[in-house]
Amino acid sequence: MGTIKILEELEKAYEDYPHVYLELDLVDVSFPGSVINTDEVVSYRIQAINRGPLDMNEVGLRVTGLNGTEVKSNGAAAQWSNSIEISGAWFGNVPGHNGNSPVVSGGSPFQFRPTVASATARDLVRIEVTGWDSDGSHLEIAHTRADPEANVVYQAAVSAA
Image (cartoon, rainbow, N blue to C red):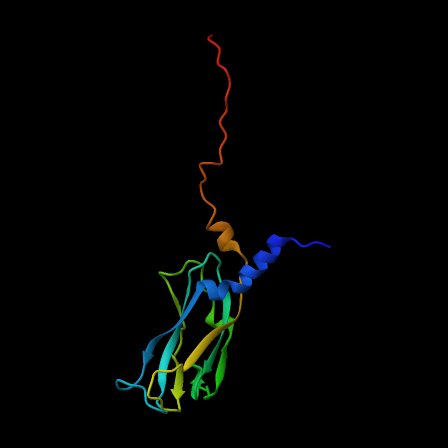
């Protein structure tokens, strides 16, 4: 039984889409003073920019503390942990080609707290995509446009009356 190569390529394109087109960042990072100290609470928001042609719907995220850093969600009952899951239903959608309109997490800020000192800069927090959906409508609708090469010209001889 053979395979349909274009479908396999499309499947791979969807699987690779987040690390090719999605830019995640920590923004509005806030901490007291001019340096981050051990056990000091740092607040931040999560920003997502989708530079690709698909709408990313219900983007789920995982925030993980690295090198002894603890993380905390943004709810009132949130507890310090090694990692937290942010549901796609909460974070929401990141439209295709939204470079000029980044999606930024709402509500109160998220937090992290490093517990180990270091003399040099090191990784403290990693945010990764845990899931997303797309119906392909942005690609099918927003990228349909006039095409002057899709035309017909009627040709016939015209006799003098």
